[in-house]
Image: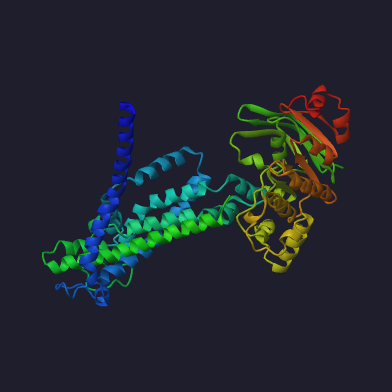
Length: 286
Length: 250
């Protein structure tokens, strides 16, 4: 075997291991973090932890207000962002394709997806909290997070619509369907899997956000669970942030337990997204 | 009396002049074949009859098309109504990702028909006309995408028949099918002639010869010759037609 061949073989083998290391790097770090969190926090999770109000004493404190706040935010954000996002995606893909205005909108929406979330927080503070006088309420928080995830939903909707073959849209027009009937009856059902996946990923991003909510004035300590969209609120990431910054060791354990709950919600939502995507792909094979 | 009359048709894609001063009449209850090499304008012409070119950027036309006495590009004509009158079957089978039943009655449900009994009757009648009923009568609730290519194309024909059009346009309906499915489609087209007028674009000379009553030969955007199919294939008046039908070019 010549020298050059040997060196090439070594390089080949070396790259395989370097590649493996790179692949595992992220996973291993995440696994170490998860295991650490689980060891610290799992023992703290019980019914009392889930159903108790916040407290100065770490052993009595619970995540009820933050958990309920997160659920409120999740539902309100979904109600606001889903119809607007899907409609905008449909418009851009099916109606506004040719105009210069649509081109301009398109570039802007791609840019919006890249704006740091704290900037959305400042926008929300000015528009929703101050100009619209919504205060540091659930609805102000949900509107701000809706802005944040709208570009994601719009882009997901457009991509999903693009996968629907032109031939079946033509078939629908050929039967005398109007544009809206074609969208409603043919395009949207066929694109539903992709749209739904995008929505779930967007919302699971929204419930993990902290920065924009800090800016609009979400509270870390809320003595009661919110009962209407106009109430003040806290959410799980805020609660975690608050507990982490306390000196007592008991709060660090609480934070670990709350992280487990937050991660569980996110994983479940991502799991649903994957399940729906697979199911739809199986149902529709062109 | 003609069911369809095209007078002085010119069509353009941008600056590309794709149809040049075409005049053509079609009699009811006949099968008319459009033949010609790729890019000769025959599909563009066919798609004008139900205004499917309306969505294409830069498409422009001159002249008039009169179907059952009405100029179809007239502003008063609703394109949705025109397409009920003039049905279309496409080159590739394109059933909707819905059940077989929903596919057949699509043209009725989008027009607000809700009467379950009526829909059932029409679905059965249309599927029988398309010679598909016996194959699918037990699986009407199954997805149309599970059918074979030939069955899908017959389903698309049934879907077009369900709204009882007077004209059915077919754009190379058998070009993506195997010989057995093709034979079934051809047999079906011949049966449909009794109730409908059919215009079919085809690349297959034998197919045009087997099923059509009249044949129009297009070349480079012009209608070179339009006559009875037997004349076009045995004693055409133009040399170009002669060369094309005998396979010397195309």
